[in-house]
Length: 210
Image 1 (cartoon, helix red, strand yellow):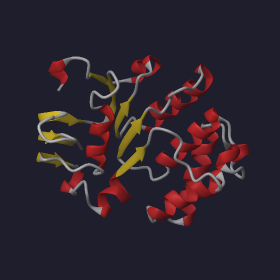
Image 2 (image 1 turned 180 degrees about the horizontal axis):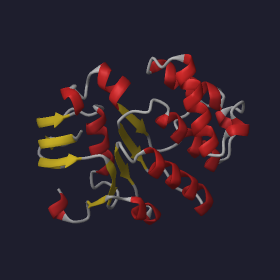
Image 3 (image 1 turned 90 degrees about the vertical axis):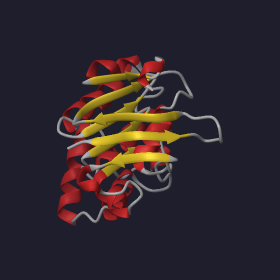
Image 4 (image 1 turned 90 degrees about the horizontal axis):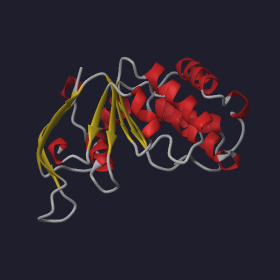
């Protein structure tokens, strides 16, 4: 199983390319993207999720599924956006259930998965609380739980520990490691604390990486 950029080119404006014939294969394990703001980390995640359309080249996915297809987003990929991005007036449980329903998970499967994730993330007692009543650390953990609900083979995590203290960061790191061992997990981050869990680090501060 692999997710591969095959000579892709992308730029937000004509004449200014962020990626120019960029090629790299991502295999199961944790890949950390590091680098300064604006270097292309989030852009790459959005390309791999199918949210941005490349100008040339190909994205090769498991089972040769198109990155822009509904099947790919429903079955193969889960994306954690920067910021919380939870439905603020819905409970933690409702946020998880909606994600599961969009992935067409059975009731028994999503309930078991929700139990596992909320237990691992210390959210078990908070499942009936609205997202807008959670602390920053609790909300970030709930956002990760929602991202992982589908149990997709590809995880794209954008700044999953941004602004968090060591205790919350440790909880999130532990779950990423335990849940992503057999998945393609790509993490964009400024947080040096995440580097120790990486199987591979791509440093976008170095021109050779692009």
